[in-house]
Image (cartoon, rainbow, N blue to C red; front, side, top):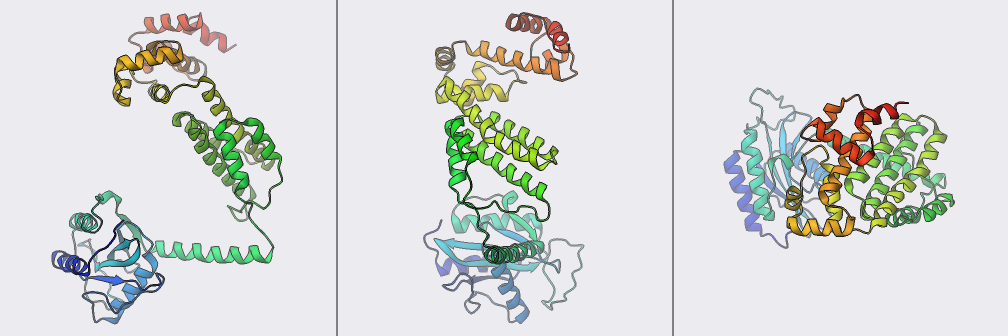
Length: 395
């Protein structure tokens, strides 16, 4: 964040932007109250009153943006707004109106005269350069917001809904539950404390859950459960569970939640969510591996369908192969290569019983160099061949 920016620098940026893009450019400074704006001290102003109204309208609606934005108005012309935050909001650099489409004929219904045409490539690069000049940090064209007049409508709808709900809640003596319940569940999941989760789920809340889908109780409950899944997933990761495991469990819950249209069943699955994530944490804590070993295991789990090796893992976590090999054997009890094979065979067992892949296809998917080696390795870990395992599981 900036500490200070001089008026001379602002003037310079406005002037060089105007000369380069051949477009109206000005700076609008905020008053002490960020909700009101002074239009008396903007630079390079237009005498057109409609232009003044345009400035006031856009800055009032978009001053909260913290990255540059190209805004397409309801009249189809475009403007750029770059907000200045120097410890707090101090004003906005405003470029426009203009067009980027040479084939577009804009009706000048607001009498702002004709609009200059700026090539989009030049515009994007210039915005990146301005941002760097102001904040001394890089931003790429893909990060620049491109929004239309619907953004304003959405903001207005959110504010209107907020005020309406606030008034209704006060009239009906409605209050949301405190964060104590959420915090307790989060801490319990993070520590793998299933008993504490059960106790917390039985407690009476000191408030109510919000309505996340008006006039649809099922959708509202699903949304609340998806939020719970997200919170529990984050808690599990903080508790040491790999992101791959946590996000996969999260996806599993959400996909099944979407399939359920029975409210009582949704309530039941809601109780299972934190318990399932806490169980993953407890399982992780049971082994008490070091951080580097958890990194190795996470990489292996993410790359079962690749030809993962000790050298690749050592490169990814920036440690020597010798160190990783020694540490893995010491903490896990088996060599890293043996652990990789075991994980691949566990995956093969799932594929044999839950998919229509052939044994050859499975061995190829899991990067075994031939089917014979896959069969031999499978039998070493399970005691039977893949063919017998598949037929036995289908009975």
